[in-house]
Length: 258
Ligand code: 13P
Image (cartoon, rainbow, N blue to C red; front, side, top):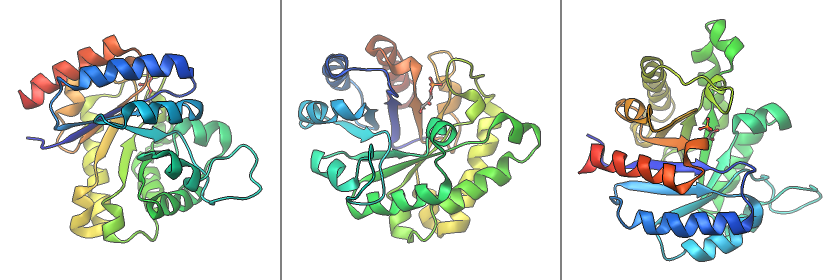
């Protein structure tokens, strides 16, 4: 039995302010008929954060940013700071998505600095980790994931660790050319990640939500959410229109909490 799960979507670079607002209005009304055991979040583009925060402020939909710099201010053209995101009232900061790592050279050390900065402002880091296809083929997925977790969460206290969420997203399972992962594989990896978190933070490690993401859709999400150490779903394409997200949410609610 699961008490509470996190379900959210990363919009990536897909929605304008206007599109984002109409999506969010629909989601807020969908959320009224979804059990409160499901914590809902959306991660819009930066330009849409302010109006979407206004729209969601009296709802149960949390909002997140897709990235963040670790410094409060400075000569970092094109970056956005924790202080700026806190001013908007952002709840979650997504860090280390595989697209950030792949196209913008984000590394675990930088992600670690961002985790610390976000926590200082009381924002919840959602740290994305995942192995790529070569690493999987070479049989070093677990080594890679253990290293990502260890470095991204370096120097956190047990108390701080409990404010963090982890999204396991195998790089080869994400996006248009992604291949959905086998549930048995996801189960083995999530169990391993839980062990690693407990090695790092003791009992506090058991309270860290472990979300799964990568080609999650209506046909496969039940298999993933039924896995013991999966505490949520992080969805891209299948949640980018509210009709398809609503179908998933209702079925999920029925399956887990009816
Ligand atoms: P897809 O669900 O489209 O594969 O994207 C997952 C993802 O990258 C969530 O961050």
